[in-house]
Length: 288
Image 1 (cartoon, rainbow, N blue to C red):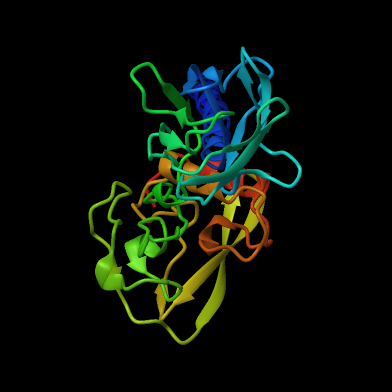
Image 2: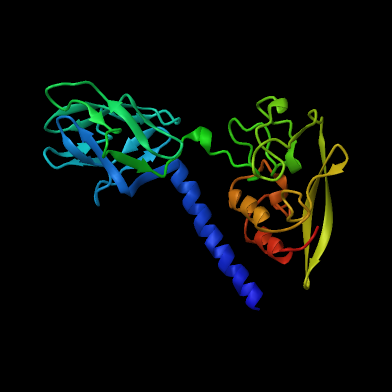
């Protein structure tokens, strides 16, 4: 009973943590203790005040910046707006009712979420905004798109030639880059280990039956070129059902069929939900 309650606490924490990470990576906010830039005509600019509500997404910045001398600066005004090219390079224009348009070109957000650079040009109005001065430090939990690939998450991310969570690190036919240039695989930690196989012509599906307590559940097993790919809740094929498989299930939780990793739909009902979760729980910490 104690072991089961501990597992429930771990699962609850994992759901909360995973949701926070996924949300912040693509829709970030300003970190509380890192929020100030310097404007040559604007004085200190606060990007993280209580009512600023600044959000950084893969294409835009929204919300407001506070200047104690000139008031609110709108990051997403009508007929303008600050842009983000998904790699962290900013552009476009914010709007101040007192100073007019404020240029944000020349600013970047690095892989750690830190703003850097100097925006705009010197003018008698708004002038330049410096994110790299001695006491300047603006940071976000948003991350550039090309830094988000996670080996072993069961998803083939952009720029990721192979994923150890898909087909046990075997490069599938959906690879968009050369499998000879595998950037991760083999245990979910990066640095090679994936294996290239040519694309297969077709797949066949068979079923097997497993009994859980007094309930019988049918699980789909996908076969590729005569080799079984799915093995119950062992999604990454390390022969154990553990937190790695749970994190893979989270990645596909309540997403739409078909799935890049078909094994997450354990009972074959074209849904990833509490039924698959209960099967994973039943198989938790077992050797497959």
